[in-house]
Image 1 (tube, rainbow, N blue to C red):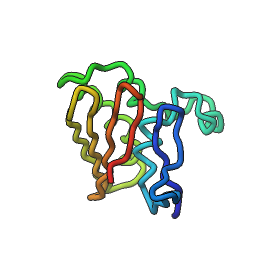
Image 2 (tube, helix red, strand yellow):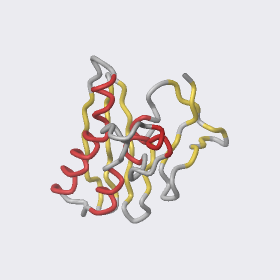
Image 3 (tube, rainbow, N blue to C red):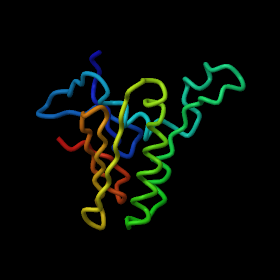
Image 4 (cartoon, helix red, strand yellow):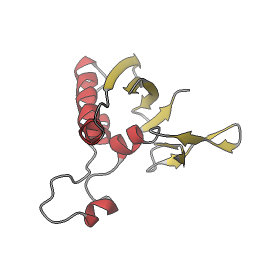
Length: 136
């Protein structure tokens, strides 16, 4: 599957450009972003689900990132939220493994490393700009 890379830039997500071209992705590259910044429950796909289903897609990470202080306690809250947001992958795709690592780099930067089935997805979070940028 080919898709265009989506990143959070503080305005609800944008296509990522590098060297003047849109960046194409193959596979799971957009899953961490969509899971962490998907929505507060009003995502259009949730309206297609039958009443009473408890698999409504609601992102926790974006809310946590916007509320925490960048310290060790906040870092652990971010990791827990990311684990919850990505839990659907391990539930829906047997054998999927996910590891999350966060690191506070400066007072205005936290790096997030997500490994899904051995593939690394790295992001940098800037709380002043409320932006998540992929690290290549």
